[in-house]
Image 1: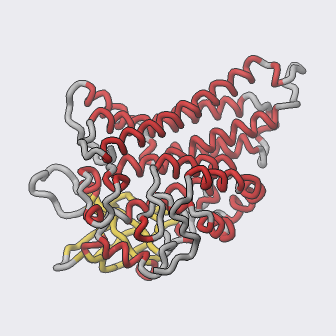
Image 2: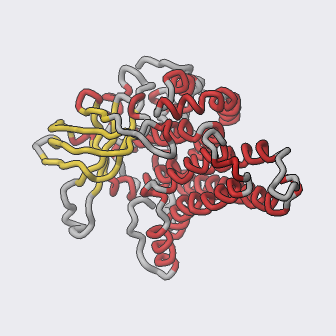
Image 3: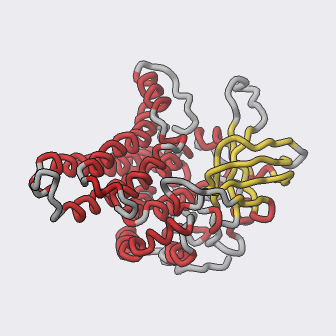
Length: 399
């Protein structure tokens, strides 16, 4: 296997975090160019790869570090703090290196056998039409929102699998792993937030996907994925949904911190409409204080979730339903909580904050875009949490 970045078996989470913080000034300088380019610049992706960030949850068998997901998401936090689009792409593309480890080792060899820095983008909506064959599927479909796809050589895209006779009323969702030779990218990414994420549309026409390159979400929910036969670390015993959902909520925490940074800098010398310094304004102070507290709460909950889940995995104990649904709720509720707080920062930044180029305003548009992701919609996870609290069974495969 060829290794394109350093393979430091003893690298620490702290060193990787320092690298992320060290990139922030450059990412802020490139933020406008990233928005105008409508995708992460090539030089930025090269730097993220070289820093080892995509290796953090990748198997050691393929040059990875097999770290607690909380360390990966701490890096995502710092990158999104400087550039939300870049943080988003790192988060959602980086989590696929963990997911690929759950697939049959033949799929891992297909992607990483010659280049263990190869990356995968995704779009999980079950829009694909799969026709079963003797050893796989003939597969077609079209999917929006494949973030970072310009920098990837493979995709995970969603489709329906054949019904499970033991669960005839439960849709069997899955993701299909497809190489770049079998799909087309449609450049249609024109948005008001996350402009630099390059979340374009994918089209697949009559591609053959062998069965070993299909991952069942039910397998991921039950923690019975085929890749666990070769990747035996506790990291790969975690429920699929618990790792995935944080990929689409954690960038919002970093973005809120970036907005708070910009808010403090922008308003440090500004006078409000009655001539009072914003730094002396109770309203301005309260807006900042509430945002800071919410960010800290969200990060602590994220750390607690993965520490708790890994403790179960390390001791081969079954996960408690109440933990799974609460952690699922915490993930989407993070975004739901931060949106109005960042809006309040914007509201306390005066009329000139509505001009293009104001960082608080731009990051508010980004966090609104995070909120639109299906996994960040709060209704179903909130209802599920309440139901399980009253004794109902857990049924959400993303828990």
